[in-house]
Image (cartoon, rainbow, N blue to C red; front, side, top):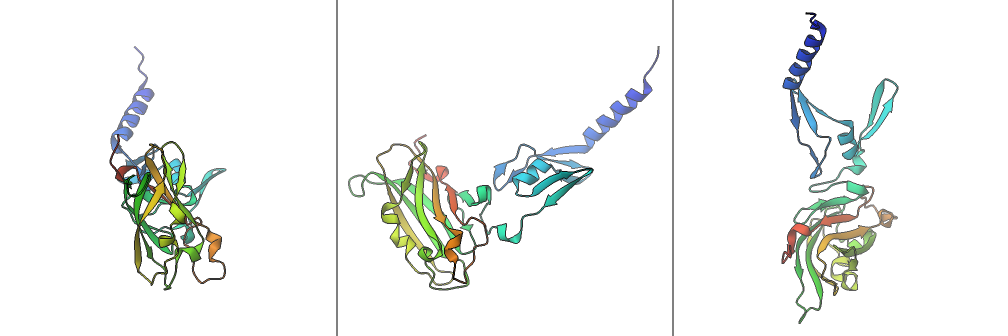
Length: 227
């Protein structure tokens, strides 16, 4: 009987390589990446698809691969993420765009008898710049909206002047409960606080991200939970 020794060697080599590999789950900015990672002989390798998801530029050349790392201007502070060119995170996390530190603390149904129909959202914003007396209105403020499951975007009542117009000393914070008036029964899924990066023209202030808008996933902190 003829034996195919070459095939047996290849099979053993493949089996040996598989045994030496360890597949790992991978999360980037809190999101699972299907490409994952693998450990081979003690060294961890991440796929090009995963690198792209992390904001790394990947270009295939003849016989090689070129990577372009994010510049310092796209680096985000504690709790932030650079998803879709904005600062993204979840309720209860601090996000930072180079000037403002921002968090969504709670989302609750408003009392229809005293506050009207809608949702009230408790937020805090802090001056994280090196300058004092800065108000969000002077840094390209474009408004704050609450996005519902049905796709509707509800603006804060009167454009939240209590949050927008208050000047803050360096490191100082401002906590406010904003009201979003709506008769929709749909639950909130996201709060968006928009800033225009061109709004700093003529000032010494600088954002550290291309798009300083905050996008906050609030699904986990909505009360009452109607699921």
